[in-house]
Length: 116
Image (cartoon, rainbow, N blue to C red):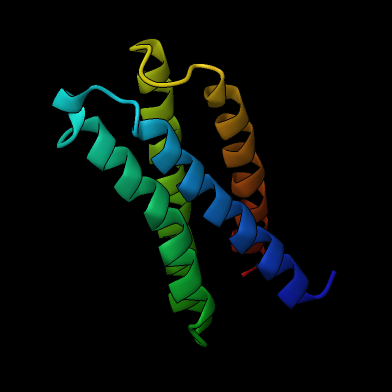
């Protein structure tokens, strides 16, 4: 698969992930707006934002650093999703779908990181 096709697919998955997280968190308790809601939203956006910024870098070490930050934000998001699920926040049926999407993104990101 050419690099741009892979990049497009990965970016699309990340974009979907961030939008789905925002959708899920709309139903979180109002007293969590400055807590887990905000943290989960920022972490999910950080996945795609750091990926996009890293993709635009020309030095491998700099590019890899942004990818590693993106991967770390993805892991943070997964933990927050697990925590939120245990707290029974939002639509519980969405969690398995989001975790699967996060796992797919993680595998793709890790593959790129290993190659750099």
